[in-house]
Structure formats: structure tokens, C-alpha cells
Amino acid sequence: MNKKQLQSEQTKKRVADAARALFVQKGYKATSIEDIVEATASSKGNIYYHFKSKEGLFLYLLDEWERDWEHKWSLKEALYPTTTDKLYGLAEQLVREDLNHPLTKAADEFFSNQENATEVEERITAMITGHLKFNEKLFQQGIDNGEFKQNDVESLAIILESLIIGLSQMSRRTNLEDALALYKTTIHVFLYGIAQEKR
Image 1 (cartoon, rainbow, N blue to C red):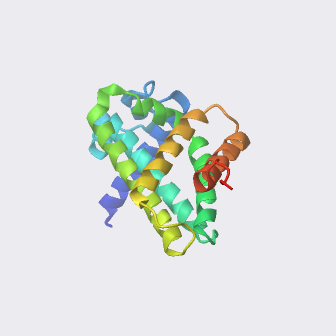
Image 2: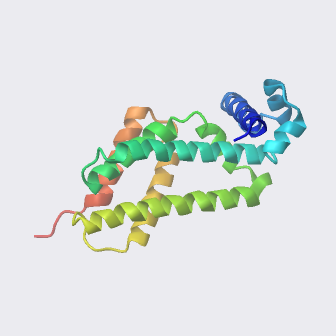
Image 3: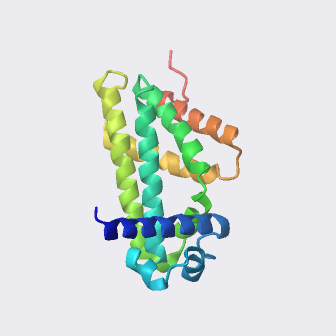
């Protein structure tokens, strides 16, 4: 990377860091490009050079969040000896990293904003596709190592993702420990069900 590219990356990082702080503090809608200009002492043109719009800047921050989440998971995954343990570990990471993430509130606001529908829909589709692939891989591991019975991993992945999305909405106002208990109960019910065995 040459000096000019390095300076460009540093500027991009400075803008992204300042924007993240503003989105956390003020929310998505209340943060303007002018606020970001003021916070970074950059010109509008400079910001638009790195990010085509406020939406593009926020999508970049969401991508960073996703990469950070994946990195943290890759460091923890080996600590879980079974796929069942991984599912409980996944529940814990979702609570600790997503419900507690500083951008969660701004992200909710962003995804409910209808003005940027096409770009947002594309991003949501890409995120969910990534999550489904992650879930499918996890279930396939469990089947391959004999923990889970043979099943349609695509369907299981969709069911788990739907549970997680619903839980994230229902847990927004709960404290961390209650949310964690709810997520772990969900994984338990998903794995073992609630019906008593017929005798």
C-alpha cells in the first residue's frame, strides 16, 4: 500500500469511527452528513469519496460489525466440543454481542427506514443468506458427527434464524441475564422439544 492509499484508508477509518460514535449517540435518522463533516473536519466531498451516501456509510459499519462478530466466533468456536455446545455458545454470543452492541438501536432505526428500501433489502437479504449458511454448516456438523439425526439442514437453518430474529425483537428491553436465559431456553426447546415422550 503506497502513502496515498494509506492516507485514504486512514481518512476512511476516521470518518467511519466518527460516524459510528454519532449514530450511537444520536441515532440513525438524527445524524446528518453535516454532523459527520463537523466531527471529522472533512469535506462532504471527501466523505462521499469514501462512502456514496449516509446509507452506504452505515452499511459499511454494519459490515464491520458482522466481520467483528465472525472473528469473535472463530476465536470461541473451538472451545465448544460438540455442535450442541456450539448452539448454546451461539445463543450467548448473540445476546452479548448483538443485543448489547452500541449500534443495535441505530440499526433497528436504519432497517425500518423506508427511504433506502432497495439498498436495505439487498443488505438484509445478504445478511440472512450468510446467517442461513452459517446455521446449515452448524447443523451439518451435528449430523456428520452423530449428534443430530438426519434432517433437512436448510429447513432447520430457516427455523433457527426465525427464532433468533423473533428473540432479538422480544429481548430488546430485557436485562442481559434474562435475555441470555431466554436464548438458552430457546436452544434447549429447539433441540429437545416440549412434548413428553409417549409411553
